[in-house]
Length: 133
Image (cartoon, rainbow, N blue to C red; front, side, top):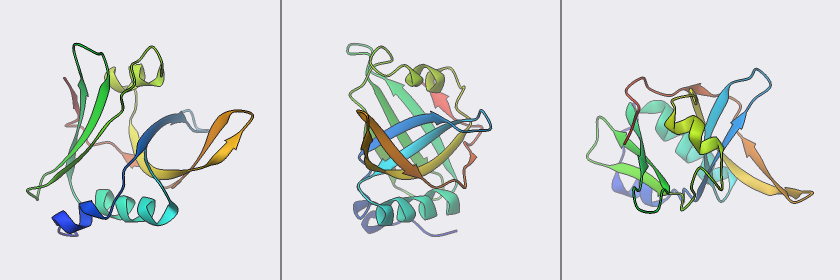
């Protein structure tokens, strides 16, 4: 286990999420960072430390937030998507516990108006203690 420090989390610029289905049909939550180095750092932190994944829905705006609560640390990381399930339908998969894997990645441009997300193909199961509120 890598002990998480405040400095570790400050170095990571978690800037977005993407929810995609891979060729095996698995729904994957991708924590998106601005670049490959940040994605690798975040991947190392989440694969080396136990965490709870919390999916929070703002009741007034219906926007989603994703929080990682590291169990062996005083620190957590989170991202407010500012998206609703209406403007990003895969969020419904997340709130219905239909996303079972997690990894990290980064945006690598776009093609025909669709963002391309390069992600670490070494996906791993989302902890079973995941909850939505």
